Image 1 (cartoon, rainbow, N blue to C red):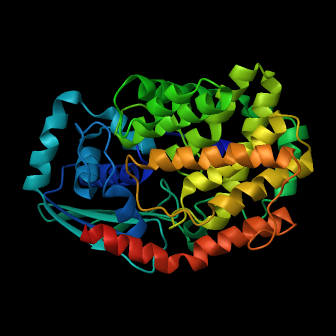
Image 2 (image 1 turned 180 degrees about the horizontal axis):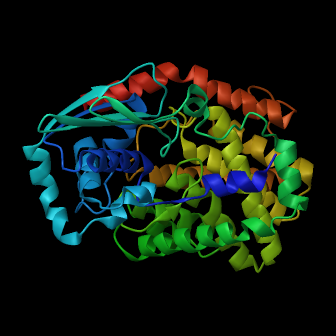
Length: 413
């Protein structure tokens, strides 16, 4: 298994919450095919896309929210090739036009069922012509582009199912061996970018009023390593959920997960003066564990993604504090025993609160593991692989109805 390739595939830049950005990306591709801004738009999206776009601010829109706003912002970008950074390429003078564009465009929005949790299908119309773009499985996995019903590009079923890369053969044992003993030199530039970009938005979140300002309040409470490490990840989520225009390096398709899995490790290592090699190995381990758990949970679900990211951090912190392999596994089990079942009720400023709660639990999980305490029974198995599979089963199968009920409540609110 090429773990370096997985990291290079997953740890990419994104500006803003990835679900509205994926819509903006698809809309930009529609406009590119038409050669004009559509006068009519029809969009079919999965329930989880609706859930994660409804209440989050879209970058470079002057604080606007919603599917319609994300589409119009995408239409203003002249760089559809920039994918999840598409909204970085909007002329600032055009931003005030977005509300009028929404008002003047006939837009129809439909929920698409039985097409997976991540599905975006946009058709744009202009003077008798039409263009269609479909994204499935992953935020940048374009599976269909057509113009006037003629296929320009289409992918097969395999690409739709796994978003290009197959993680079926990922294993905890294999990724641990790579992270702690393998040659990781070729992924250090990606890790450096992850630290630089994610640290930058966290600093902004600590300086400005963003979202619920949870990061600011956490860092005021104490200057010890743990609180500061948590505060930076939370402040990054504060800023990102507020639509701040600063790209982050994502993990498993999520910026919040990318910051949750990286910033606590980086800040903790700075404060504790831990050697760079150990920091890099901890980052490789945490990123891969987060990807592994998320691959079992699914790209979007009722299961909060901060949990999988923070769980990975619990193992990394245990490693940095001198824990052995068994203690690292025990920390992950402790974290999952406490956090599994935390719901995702859509992207919004209060996501930062869940990042805080998940990381606070992760540090406790590490403390317990290092003191010989490990959760047992229930969904926790002695086998770490089986435990992760069980959590994935809960998220994929057990929380399907939960996901539907959450969406019903959100739409009614």
